[in-house]
Amino acid sequence: MSVESVKSAIIEFLASTTPEVLCIRGHWGTGKTHNWKTIAKDRRNKPGGVALNEYAYVSLFGLNTLGELKIQILQNTVVRAQIGDLASFATINNAVSTLERGAKKTVMQSFRALFGNRAETIASALGLLTSKQIICIDDLERKGPKLGSDEVLGFISYLKYERDCKIVLLLNDEALEGEDKKKFAAYLEKVVDRNLLFAPTPEESASIAIKEQNSLSLLVRNRCSELGIDNIRVIQKIDSAVEQIEPLLSAYQPDVLKDVATSIVLFCWMYHQPEIAPTLEFLKRHSRLSLSDNNNELTPQEFRWATRLDEYGFTNVDDLDLALMSGISNGYFTQESIDAHAADLNNRVLHREANARYRDAWASLHYSFAAGEEVVDSIMQSFKDEVAYLTAENLNNVVTLLRSFSMDGEIGEVIDAYIAAKSGVKDAFDASRIFLRDEKLDEEVEKRLDNAWNKQSQPRHIDQVFLQLGEDAFSAETLTALSSAHVDEYVRIFKAYEGDHLRTILAGVFQYRRIENASEPMVEIVAKAQEALIAIGKESRINAHRVKGWGVTIPKEEIAAQDDSGLTAASQA
Image (cartoon, rainbow, N blue to C red; front, side):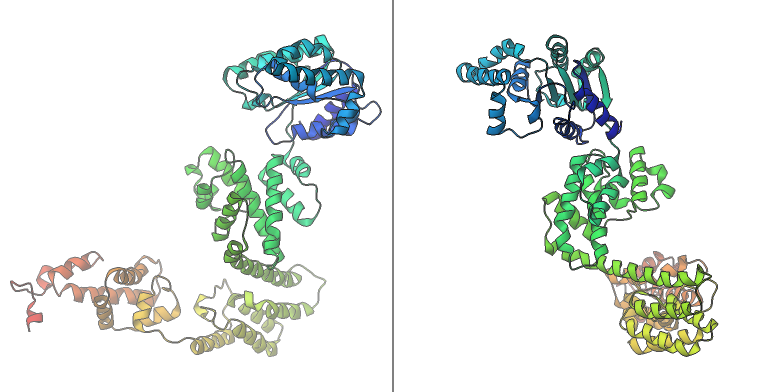
């Protein structure tokens, strides 16, 4: 039932003098108590808003006897005008001014002072003082173990029928357990007149928890709703965490704060509701392929998590995420931990924003029949403005567009802008890495990039090329260097390095065997590596055994003969 439906039921309940029992059930943190107290306080001064003159709110948390409950009711009874006020001398004085209320309070305080624990027995006798009032009994699921739900419901029935009271019972019935839960279910229908399930939507919970209307608060509210978080306390803790980290991100792009806030919503939910939110282990292995490729490997719960995370836009956990999780767990964030990782996110945001502006410039060309040829100038200018975050593919697209509009005189300036912005950027001038669909690489672009590559690149020693195969196996420089090297150079390299270095080299050259439609240089590299291993394998039986692990078999008759000391004839010579 939505917030508005429950609100209407509460208003009707407060306005009626008829003795009745209203039960409002719902999960912890969804705002049952907040909703009740807010409405009751709001209605107290409205004409006809609250029909009875006295009111008491009591929590059953930790109470173990009905006597303790009766004492709480007597001590917490206030007049209608005080509903929702904090206890103070003013409320007490005002209460004592009412004869019946003053008698209750004075008698109870006196009996407590005189009889101590026996005051509970006296309270039962004084129960006659409780009549014709509204009583809110909260936290049934948190009562002490010695107090049964059936006892509480029996007492509520007594208050209704014998003392003409109106009682509202607030609880999370799902938290009741075992025999106590069975007793509650058995008595509920006999005692309660109206039984409501308080289940606000995530949107309603977020609106209750976060009242501010600034852009960041609205973002947090929307993100909480997207994840389906309906626990008001959790949402408030999320909002507090975002407010805490906001000043630590003031030096970064505004969208960095938005991205971090989005992450904090997810991570706070995980921390405060671990029983229903995804685990960190699941996040670490989650990707956008989860639903399409791995759904057979997911449990039903994991499948729901994966669906929700995909809809939320979550892809992977990075170092900044781990720092945020640590801050949530510790209860605070530090500038040092944020600065250690936020720079990468800031760069990604700058890249994203630059690409968005560049795409907008192209949109005027593709998705408007109103704009004239000035749109080409806009695209060119946008490229130059955002060039630090754009690619060689973008460069080729702009140059191709300029040629199609006979603006060849502008092309050199555009290429100059790209080369100046990308000076020192790895592979920025490697024309072989440019991805093209149907269009061809512009000849001037290719020539200028090759020239820039040659000026910028210091040729690596052949040893470096081999040793860096694990990270740079497909660049034009690597493929050219390895395919043109002599077999004797391969032999020297293979014999000069050992351990992890040799493993990297051999794994690097033979990875080209697994490439479908391998290029001519790749085929040449594999052939030379095999030829080198054959030469090494023929040197001795031990080397023949070693090269066999790399797919090279040496016939026994081709292995160099050895004397009794294990030396080959060639080595003796």
